[in-house]
Length: 317
Image 1: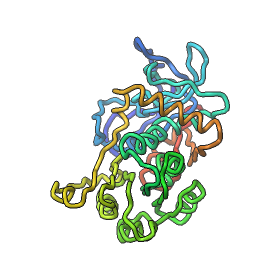
Image 2: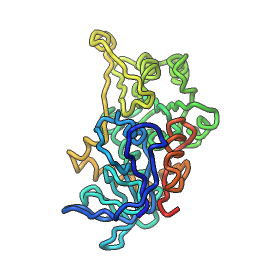
Image 3: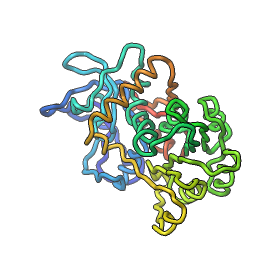
């Protein structure tokens, strides 16, 4: 089968198109013929082996896939952990979910990691209360486009989006944001306060890190919560406990992999997301679909923030 393999950590040029044997599922796993593989920021971090979970070489990247179960022919979406950038992949049966009629493979794939993340940022980590204001950082991305739409449905009173270009900000307004501001760290605190009518904000969903995190933290109201679900800038932040004490602010973290320790959290959220998509309540933004051989370019575009929405690979091209 055709697959993308990483034999050395480093730049995107290390992502090589190769021929490999079809994988054999272990006990409790399923073999999936892949129609689409999802790209995630974690893939770019994994390529340098700086992701939260360390990788071992040689590696076929790709955390998630959509496609067809070989044993039953059923359309499914699955978190495979690795091996997704290929024509065939294995995935644990417990992390494989049927795709309902009327929902495309692309939509289901975007609702898996990005959708589950957006849903749990609100419900589990931020514990959003009715009427609170929410800032969605990088709101034109895969998680951001879904979080922007879910905000009001899950109780937000006002949703403020950040994005790097006028076109991306326009997209977030189309998706339901009440306001959209430039996401550059310089002056971001002031822009967020202005977008919230001069008042500090209640919740921030943050994935950039560095100066953007600092600016968002300063915009938080007392008892406000900032939830970190990525560090796309690769710039770590440090906080003094005294500052948390004096401001009554909360900093929380969210890592998708911890959901698997509580399967009911996954099932509740994925059922809700797929149902909303089936009813037309969620618009999945697919930014681009790349042929498998262009996996390196796809990661370059993702890291450079040239794209919007969910990025996909088509292993059949």
